[in-house]
Amino acid sequence: MRRSRTSPPGWPEYLADRAGRVRHPLLGDYFAAGCPAPDTPIGEAPLVALDIETTGLDPRRHAIVSIGLVPFTLARIPLREAQYWVLKPYRELTASSVTLHHITHSEVRGAPDLANVLPEVLAGLKGRLAVVHYRHIERSFIDSAIQHRLGEGLLYPVIDTMSLEARLHRQSPWARFRRWLGRPPVSIRLQASRDRYGLPAYQGHHALVDALATAELFQAQVANRFSAETPLGELWS
Image (cartoon, rainbow, N blue to C red; front, side, top):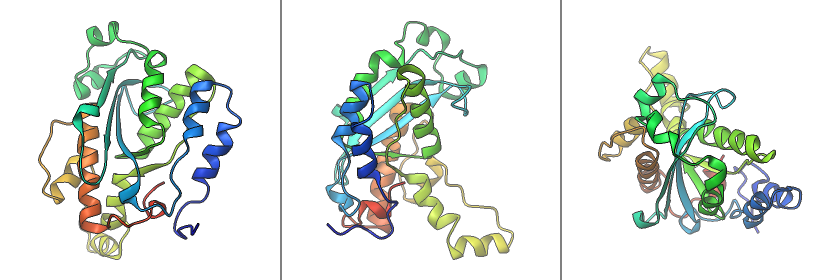
C-alpha cells in the first residue's frame, strides 16, 4: 500500500507494537484496534473530536476535570453519540481554573475519578482518529493521567486543528511577510479560527462544547483548504 511521503512514520506500527507489549488489558484493547494507514483518505477515516478541561496547563502539576468526545465524519456530527464526563481531579481545583471552566468544588466532590470512566473514554477513542485543538494539552494530559493510574502511558495520533491553522497563518510565506511588516500574528485560538470560516460563536471552555466546535472547525478546514481525498498522513501529528 502506498504511503504518503509527507506523513510522520510509524503510527500504525507503533500502535501494533504497543498492543503486544502493554500489561493493562484496557490499553491492550485500545492499541489492538490500531488506526488507519497514512494514505487513507480523510473522508474514509473514523473521527472523534476530543477536548478536555484541566486545573492548569502543566500535566505534571495539574489534572483533568472534564472530557468531551464527539464522534463525527466530514458529512455529519451525530450529537446523540457525544459523551461528556466531569471528573474528580487528584489535584485541587484552583480559583483561576474554576473561573475559566466554571466546574466548581461541589461538582467534582461527587464526581468519579478518571480510572472509573476510563473504559468508556477508551471505548470512545478506540479505532478512531482523534481531532483536537492544540494537541500538547489533550495528548500530554491524557498520557500523564493514564500513566499516573495504570503505570503505562497512552500516546496516539491526532489531527490538530490549531496546527492546521498555524500552517497558513504562522508558517506560510504570507505569515512571514506579515511579521516582516511588523503586523501582529493572526490568532489561531479555537473561536478566532472558527470566525475565519463563518462558524458561530460558542461559549468556550466546556469540554463537550469545545469538542463540537473542534469537529465543526475541522469540517470547515477540509471543505475550504483540503478535500475528502486528502490522505491522513498530510494532516495528522
